[in-house]
Length: 579
Image (cartoon, rainbow, N blue to C red; front, side, top):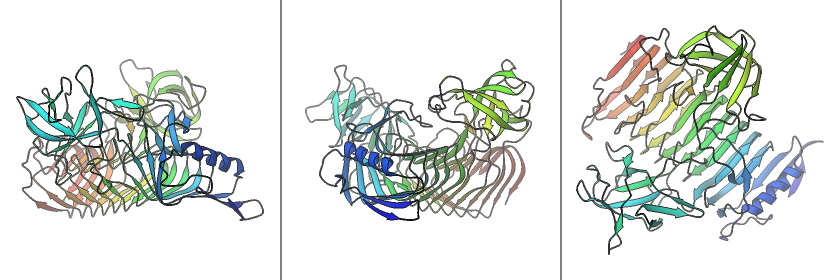
């Protein structure tokens, strides 16, 4: 360690991982050594210091043994505890994490990197991967609707047939039974047209003398010999990178090859820049998939999210999702006080709000705003000692809560935190060959989606959403510009909310009863749609939407199939200009 005085009270502290015994390409578990090094950094750190942590290029192997154990409640992930963390960067500001081309490879079911409670940190020049992904990749030998499907796993898949004839695959400390799959074209790496989530009944399988596995109940007419199927579960225990309660974070030239959850999950953070952050395949390793869920996901963040020049491919969900979380009002204690509860089973256990923050109330069935904006005066968890692990909060507001909120039987209300909403710029990115959708935005602040390539996103390329009934992801968009993007053959399969290439689809159970509009201020201009015949724009509950100067180049790559046959379909929309 070299300490260079930066001022009378601060220093630049440089830590060389190799000098601390963390050396590349040795094939040994470095988890314990990294724990010791981080402990040393924390003990020597003084407020105002800059910490430079430097790695040499090469491969570093992390195993669960010796890793940090943490009780992290991570938004939009399974709340399984504890998390085994390989690189736990906690409570130290001004970190410069220099990977210098390092390849961090993880074993078991780990959370590779966590940056929590930190300000002004930069993570750069490394990649994250797992030695044994929790997805079993197989190749179809033959498939028909009578005899079922015969397949062979890739050589790197550790698999077995259980005593009750169920196909299983395993790795270090885990065994999984796939419940669904994604079908890829072997040559193009694209998801097979109109396959979506493939059902994979793998009970009753048997092994032939040639080493092939036959699943007699797996009968799908769209599967053909030569296709590649990624067999998976819906589990998502941890992302590759977890950011929590951070401010001013830059992630530069970092690549995620695989994670059992998302590529990056940030919650309650302020100001994040993703500079050439990518979730992408490693050339030559034979995989057709990357992350089990979204490439990037931002929950309850504020300030500015700036994501640029990235590559996102082969994910099992979206490239980016930006939202807050509605709490459901479950009770009213007095005129100023309600009880609010996290409702989705994957989103709870972390701070939702703080005194002084702006909020509004919403009627769940119509998504209408109820009353005027308010402010939190005090918020305390009811079912846990602190925010960590809490599902339910008692919230006292500065002004009176609107009449009926929290005390009307059979009528549900939510509360939205308007302070924890970010401005977003998503520019010059490539999104391709992934499941579900391309980019999702639910924030009232300025959002710019520009100069991106959306190439075979399988579902809608862009979704503006909002839901206080199922996902509980808030809130309404008020200022969105979608410009100079190129959309190539999106919407080859149907998924939730995918009504067009660009889908403006808030979940509103009682649209007829709605008295307001949910989204507003949307401009879609100067984009190019290279597509087979599918709807370009679907929008409902919108006040102000402009669709102009867009070019459509039709092809015959796929047969039209979508139930929506309109180029532009609007439902309960006003202030519309389509040119």
